[in-house]
Length: 323
Image 1 (cartoon, rainbow, N blue to C red):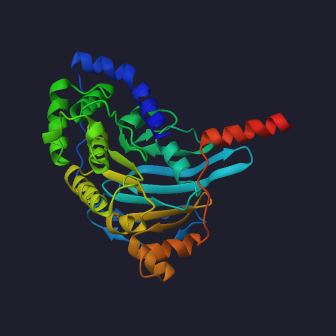
Image 2: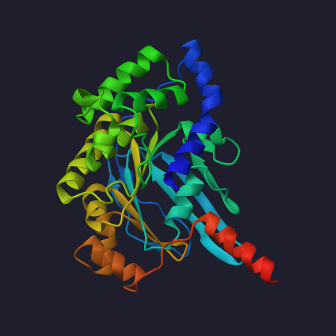
């Protein structure tokens, strides 16, 4: 599914982007600086936590979600969700399996059309201006999406073509990013020979190539050992400071969110049940760590995996045939 998502974005961007590559034109570079955070008071039924302010994050929202809803027949996967993400913050979007995380992220990244509600990302409406929305974010999928038969440099160069970056500018950017993630010395090696952590670092570098305003990280450390996970989050924290990029992350490793995130939103049964800083969530639930707060908010029962949109469509088709 992740590979399909990457191919979808490639085709959506290729035609206009390839013309700009051949003509040597480049898109406007977005220059940001890291700032701070303040919690957001959102949908009335969501648990409101005490306000939190950090001067490192701008107060201007880069993502605004209002009354976002996704239904599959009689089933509501996301139910009137509202929240904001500020420029320059690391925002953790947490929830149990089947809570609506994946469906929400697919709508944010133009892969799924909402039933109702609105999403604005970097000033662009997701429904009316999906191409500019796609140009505003980078993404690291839960499953690997790099071409393992290409070298690290070729993977980066191919991505530059898709986004229409000028050759000279993109090659300097590729060198800077591969150096940042400590892969420049191995730029000519095939990605299939890389370890899991190296592949993840390459995907993060690739996602930053076109100067996105927002970087989506969907379970970026799944399957990695603790040392590699820790190393990867150090890279992400450095990127957040040096590039000023907004990071929207999901993870089932709750301790990662506790260490990395400026602000956390918890979704359960399709609705936001809490939104605030880590300290806010711990204080409101009376727990000493984020994992305890998360379990207090969502319960301890084991959940089924969230069904994909294709699975929902298959279920609807079967029901129609039986009727």
